[in-house]
Length: 428
Image 1 (cartoon, helix red, strand yellow):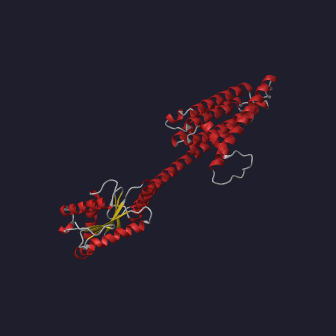
Image 2 (cartoon, rainbow, N blue to C red):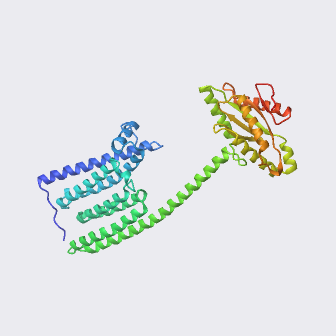
Image 3 (cartoon, rainbow, N blue to C red):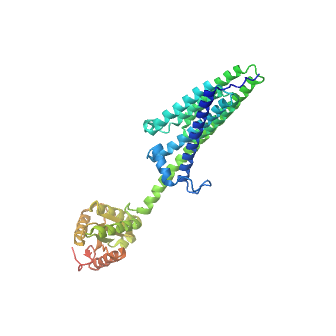
């Protein structure tokens, strides 16, 4: 036997109409805010774009007004707004049932006021930034649990519209898969099973005189359990996918770091390679154009390196290059740069240094080489070098060519020497 419709008094009908209008307006506002944000962040032109649609400036101002200027808070705020939109949809359905006289208006008003109060409190916590102090700044677990409680409450008083609560529960749980942690979602599923199980028991007791009333509540409960089990399985699978994605991101980051090292670092000596050195030279030249000063470059070549390779093998030659790069690196300042230019050649960059001062540094390193005992097979290793000023009004290739010319002059003068391109060849 069905209960008779609950008729509203004039004042109650006016209040219900006002409540319905406010809820509907809030829902439309939230939908506009969410869609405007989606349009701003989309790389494609949305199908609903029109001349009246909010422009980017309007959207950014709305973001700051509603969600603060923090981009992360804006993202969390839009997720919160989507959840609120689902809650408002449930409240609209409930109040519509009251408007039609099939739901107790007093119980509907109590639920509506409680739900709106919770929404306001959660928004206040979010808007003031207090959510950033929580372990989960999105408050997804708390919001999902509260939604489950209110949906169970709405199912209890919902009358013929009770299936709407189950539909909204499914929507919220599906949305929470992407916004809540796995643990929070499992807790929400367990809470839903207990809360809806209890309210369905109460409804079945109320409908014991209605034909098939209790049986239908049992059917609803079994369908609910099937849905919760399915959600739990999806949560487990999604957790595995997230872990796989996280592992792949870590591996990708390591691979990119290794690629970056290979692109800018010489594998044998660990020094910057030719490509990286060209970038440093270009930066130094740009800085020199802006601020003036003198910058020098030096091209260094190991003496008789081919003989070392032929007599002792390429393995010994590699050890010589590693040991020599270490000795030269120790003789430079932190602002200087040493790079492997190719083969047995090295290139040095001396910011704010004249060619004569750079030559003095190289001569000092040559003296340190005579005392170094780091070379294999008792080898005595020397180098020749050519120094040139880095021209700010000419190409990098021209300056390097000048240094290379000075290097050949040092080789021709008997090796183990340093020559400056702008001066006559000098000996130690």
